[in-house]
Length: 249
Image (cartoon, rainbow, N blue to C red; front, side, top):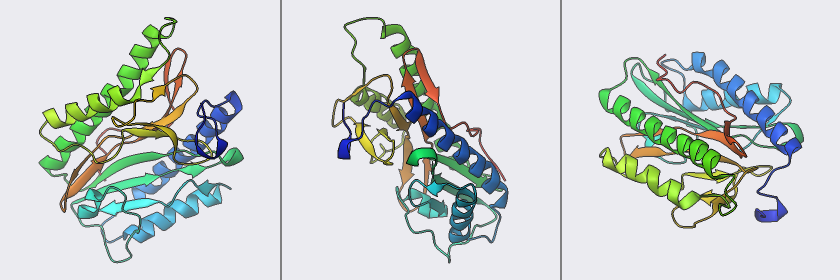
């Protein structure tokens, strides 16, 4: 199976090793950056600190860093971190970034950070997104582990997975996310196939991809949790390991 520009969707062992290294560096950067998020700091300052940390490790950014405070978290891809938007004493923060490390292979992760006491609506939305992502992870891990030895099974339906997660979020009373559940990645941050209800691609062993459900309340707040994972013959391997417990600074 081919991704755009001739990249293989099924990664070799050496490619998977390099992507695991990129994910480890992403985790290290997250651990470094969280204590630096304090009232008064700007989106731009945090974005710059992330970039500096990764480059100091002789790596590159896999894509432009997304740092969003407050209502900017409701923008799915808030690509321009602002020098004017400052962190407040009670704040919601979205960090979406990844390292491009050995061999030019990418990682991708999104985490939420809460400054001060998080609002109840933030906590409820966060718990819903975490449960939705966990549902997808468990489905892939258990379903594929059970069916991989059945010659009739060629993979797991990305569309089915996307629909399942969307329905979970909608049953909790939230709007569906306006993007796919995830995408493959490698030397490019976005490769095919996507985990999308609009295209029933099969997810098969050797694919490295993201799982990134979200909730976005326009003009108010947004929540997204994203991990880079790899489907293996015996289940799912999660590359990005940063804690997903409610992080309060």
